[in-house]
Length: 314
Image (cartoon, rainbow, N blue to C red):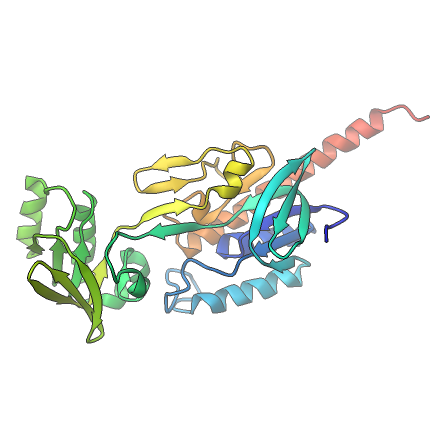
């Protein structure tokens, strides 16, 4: 079916950014639909962190509360994946798998990103539990443990120092990273950071931690740090006429402060436009995008009212 009348905003993605924007818009009496495929990026994690008042809560519990809050303000929730989106005149049509088409005056892309892991067998199976990347999201939980770092680029120097602040037992597996510079070697030596040369061929669970296979031997660590490539989902944005932004660690949707993109009527928030956004940051960006979307619609309505007032009465 198709909605006969358009929503003010179609929010694509029901994570912290999308739901926060929906609540903000709903509280301003905007008609909002949130379309969500139900695949949150942080689903493997046991708890969300750095989120005031919700420290350590399972991510899906937080989202369930957010969905209930959005519905309490009249937001419509649609479970499903968006298959296509297009501009029709001054509005947009969004197709959802299952056959529904939703019409909206504005679109907010809150579709997050995909973590592309290094090509090592076994990493994906332990992602979000004992294979990690962010010291601020998961570092406290592995404090004082033996932490390995799978080096794939020059950022390993920074990673090693961050995790050395949390534990004295840090081992860098050089894997495919370029040769560290002299300053990095000096820092690692001074801090007692162990370095293992050679590629890591596989990762397997062992004794609550991980066993890493190298040439002719295996090493055990309690947790392994990796550097994913962060790739915002491009399909809808590029279909609407946008161009993705290439960054050192991935691709994102380029936005202005508040979430407006180069495509008229299309906004983005959370990891779609900010690869480094944690839950709290994504939520804040969603609120700000909701505020700016409401203002944008308000000004458009005011301009339309002025034009209508100036038209001669017949």
